[in-house]
Length: 166
Image 1 (cartoon, rainbow, N blue to C red):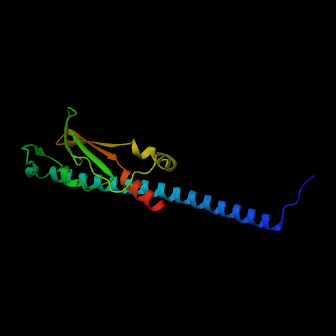
Image 2: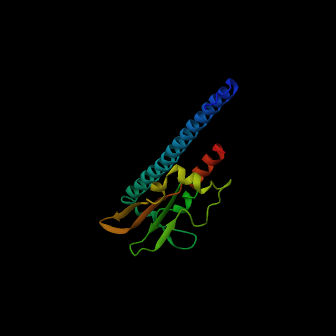
Image 3: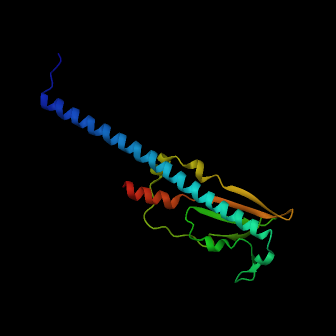
């Protein structure tokens, strides 16, 4: 025997299902936009840094007055310590033997705000960005002087998106 539901119950059920549908659509939109924001931010910062470093390499090929010594007495080729404020990237310069010579992250960069939960990061699915450092061999006058390794660090952007979302 089929029981007929009251009109009030049917209206409440319809409104509830519509609200759940809207909430689901909003969540998918937020996640899609957040993922695109993180990828775009990391990609644009990476492109900018590569462009600036390419310009610096071109300058070095014409002017050898660049061999400045750092405060520690070491020769600083790219002066990466001056790029400490670039939040989305870790930039390292390794000599031909693989020893780290310079980095923009000599100390751990402190983050503001709380870390997003692991499920949120997994939902954004940006793992492809996290593990793909860009590598660039640096050759001056036909001689390999080292390798630049630019590693994406979207953690700052993820924190901002988590704060906005929550």
